[in-house]
Image 1 (cartoon, rainbow, N blue to C red):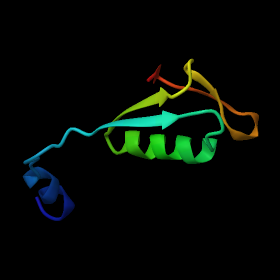
Image 2: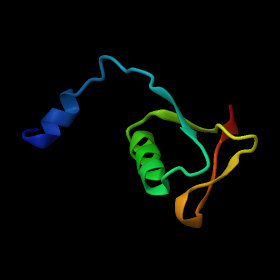
Image 3: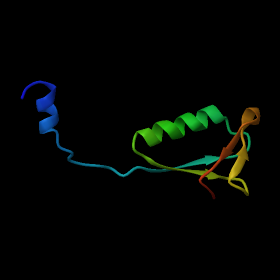
Image 4: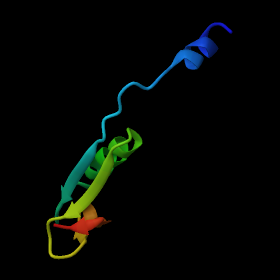
Length: 73
């Protein structure tokens, strides 16, 4: 084997770090900023919980967009 195949054959995971994050959302949150950040972190392997700082899990973000959090604080 040579090239890329040999790199994958010899690859070994030495250390994994568990990433747990809480992303708070509230009424007026900029939806694009919140959704992109949550998506990028989850794609990167982070355990992301979206939490509403309001009395309910649904928040009214900017521009009439609704965001439903995973839980409330």
